[in-house]
Length: 319
Ligand SMILES: [Zn+2]
Image 1 (cartoon, rainbow, N blue to C red):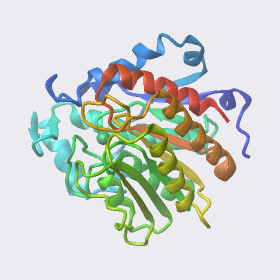
Image 2 (cartoon, helix red, strand yellow):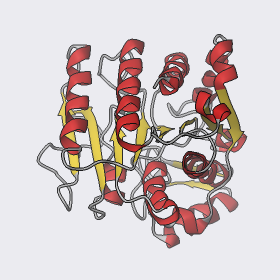
Image 3 (cartoon, protein in one colour):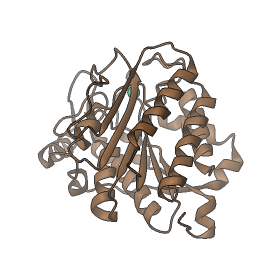
């Protein structure tokens, strides 16, 4: 176990950026700014946790950093579209005037969290960001996502911090098709995604093992018992790490896998968020000095999302 400073050891990073509110999809869109506002609102009810958070305003990732995972021409295109006032990339995915600032801060939060984890800051952080990232492809946005925050983070950790093996674990209710596309060509990045099936975006069959058999897709029916999802996810994580000890865990924390989410049919409750988080933290302690960076993906019932983020951050403190 790697020990940081006494203060950092007790704290976890909580990274956000006010610019993430500038990604303007409109209130009729499920991925609206009210999602993020629900998180500090929920935190107000947990003063003890609030004092254990090292709350930082994230930096903006540069074009070059985002291009660690994306086509630089696409990155420039998003920036230019935002400068020109915005455009719609597909039926669900919007670039508004503030979207470059938001999406580059969303990616920058993950990079800052990694710098903290491998520097003298908290080894674990949660990035409360939007737009989400796990559907974004090499040269295209989709499914509310512009840039693949966790995939960029995985490549950045390898390029910047000398990390070899990265495990990305995605419990969002949707398949992390973008993350898979952006990491599967790197054999030392392994990706586990549990998702509702059949469901948006239609990818993520269990037979789809990625370029180097470094992808573990876990498609699951809607409406199963909670423990079935938790068990399936953790057993996929354990399958993915046979003979592969990660130097870093990155979590795609999608809370649309909670019961009652308008965009999903899974049945998870807050206790399951706690279990999943603690189980991942305990593996991080075992494997990689506790290093775990988590980035918000989906979750479209704002009050549930806020509560889940608090439970998740409490779980990150465990270990
Ligand atoms: Zn989702």
